[in-house]
Amino acid sequence: MRRKWLRVLLAGMLILGLAAIFGPASVLAKGKDTVVISQKRDVATLDWIMDTAMETNTVSRCVFNSLIDLQPDASFAGSLATSWEVLDDLTWRFELRKGVKFHNGDPFDAEDVKFTLERVKDPEVKSRWAWLVKEIAEVKVVDPYKIELKTTSPQPGLLAKLTYIPIVPHKVVKTHVNPDFGLNPVGTGPYRFVEWVKDEHVKLSAYEGYWGGEPKIKYAIFRPIPEGSSRTAALLAGEIDVVIGVPPSQWKEVNKNSTTRIACKNGTMIYLGLDTLKPPMDNLKVRQAMNHAVNVQEIIDTVLEGTAVRMNGPFHEGTLGYDASIKPYPYNPEKAKKLLAEAGYPNGFDTVLSTPPTEQEGATNMQEVSQAIAYQLSKVGIKVKVEPQEIAVLWPRYQNQELKTYLFSWPERWEPERYLRALFHSKARGYYYRNPEADRLLDEGAATFDRNKRIEVYKKLHRHLFEDAPWVFLYKQMVGFGVKKALAFEAPFDGYVKPWEWSWKE
Image (tube, rainbow, N blue to C red):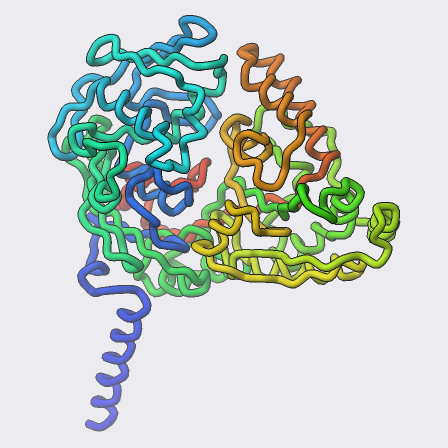
C-alpha cells in the first residue's frame, strides 16, 4: 500500500514538474488539431512592423500577408498582389487579389495597401522596417484592386523588400501610431489571433475564410523556452511538436528517439561585428589581424560539432553577386601579431565582446563561441572581456553605438538590398561602419535592373567588404528543427516555420 501511495505521489510530482516547465495544462491539451511550437524568446509585439526579431516575424507571418512571397528558388510569387509590372524605372504597378477578407470580415483593397506603406514610412511610428520603403515616394490608388508605387530611384530589389511588409486593415488600425494593434492584431493570413499570455504562449486559430484555403491544423501555439536543452526535453517529453533551434550537441539524442527527428535548413550567418569608427578597429590592419587570429574551423569542429561552414565575407552563397573565388582568411596568429605591430599595437589591446547569453536567431552556443574567440584573440595579445547580455538590453546598446565588438547572427537572404544595405550603407544604419566605396557599390547595385550587371556590381562589393574587413567573418550554422515524426514537416528554406503548410500523418 505504501509503495502504491509513493508511486501516485511521484507521478503527481512529475506532472506538476512538467506543467511548471512546459506551461498550463489548458495550453498543452492537444490532439491532431493542434501543433505546439517552441521558440527561444517570446514575441516582442504582434504588430510586425515594430520589431525585426525572428520570433516576432515567425508568429506574425501566420497572421498577416504581404503583397509578395519569396519562393525556395529565390523567385517571387503573388500573395495579396497577383501580378506586377515595371512601367518605367521609377514606377511599379500591382494588381491586387480580389475577394480577400481580414479576420474581422472587412474586405481587403488598395486603401489598406496605401495606408500600410504610408504607416511604415511615417517617422512618428518608428517602424524597424521603415528603411525598406523609404524610396517609395508615392502610393497611388488606381482603383480598388490596383496600385502604383512611385520611387525616388530605380528599385530592382523592391519585390524582396515588400515580402517583409505586412498589410494591415486601415479601418481597424485607424491611426499610424497605434500601440493597441500590437496586442490584438488583425490580418488576412492563414491564422487569426486568439490570445497572448506574455512569456507563456501565443495561441492562433485557423482562419476558415483564408483565401489560400483553411489550414489543416486548427490551432498553432507558440511557446517561448529560452534554454536549448529545455526545449529539447520538452520535445522528447511529447509536450512540444516543433522546436526551433536544437543545439548541435542534442541532435543525436533527438534523432535516436523513436518519435522525433532533426530537420535542417541551410543556415544562419554568425559574425563578429567591429566598431570600425573608433580606435583601434578603425585601423584596417587591426581588423585583418583579428580575422587571422580567430581559428574559425576549430570552433566549427569542436563547439558546433561540425554543424557549420566557414564564411568568406558577409554574402550568403545564394545572395546575388556571391563570389566563390574569395577564400576565407587563413588562421595565422603570427601574421596577426605582425599586422598588429604594424598598426601600432605590438602588445595588443583590451576590448569587450558583447553577446547574447545563450542563443540568437538561428544560432546556438553563442556563449561558448564567444569564449573561444576571446581565448584565441588573447594568443595574439588582444584581451577580451566577454559581456553576455539579454537581447532586450543588447539591441538598444547596438543601436546607440555603445558596443566595441559583438557576436550577432543574420538569417540567409538572397537579395542584397534586403540586408547588405542595412548592415553596410552609411545612410542605412551606419552604426559601426561607413565607407564611400561600399556606399557607391550598394547604390549602383540597387539602381541596376539588368541582372547580369547587378551580379558584377555585387561581386565587387563582396570583394571590397572582404578586404576591408568590417567584421571578423565566422561561419554559417546549420539550423536544426526538432520535430515529431508524426508531423508532415520540412525545414523552411527561409527559417520561418509555416504551420499552415503542415498536417498530422494518419
